[in-house]
Image (cartoon, rainbow, N blue to C red):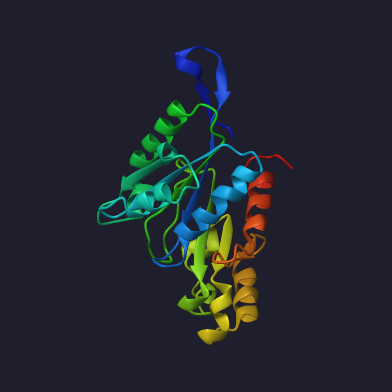
Length: 216
């Protein structure tokens, strides 16, 4: 990406890791998405690390560390306190420092996934923190979510509609939800996922390789 870092304070620059935010409401499947993305990215030879945000715990970070999907040392936790959006938007200092520290410890890292704490539809990421960010909603939240036109839905570089397998069981018209999402987002992409089966994950990785890592 555009940020340049100095190797050990010397004048020889190196390209910093891309930073990709993953936001969305509580229970939308952000951590499950991270768990799906890790092996998919690693399989393509992409060197990654992860930062999770929780209110007053490191619950999500511990879950990912225990998963066996990634070296636990490559997972950092940020405690957001009472306002999960503050540390990804108004004052992302803690997350910036966590990402910088991961880059110092793992100089070859190409991409850092930053999972926000569960928030509402108004949650967005600061461009000082992320190069690209996605917003995750799920069908169980209702097919009217796109029509509410929350900033997270509208402004994210990628909107992910997760848990598509649940649509028949929660009375959601998935085709309408997808169509409404496309309508409110203009030319920004919308992808459908079922993290329990891994459906749609390769499409997200394709997009990240193309739009963030510029590998294709």
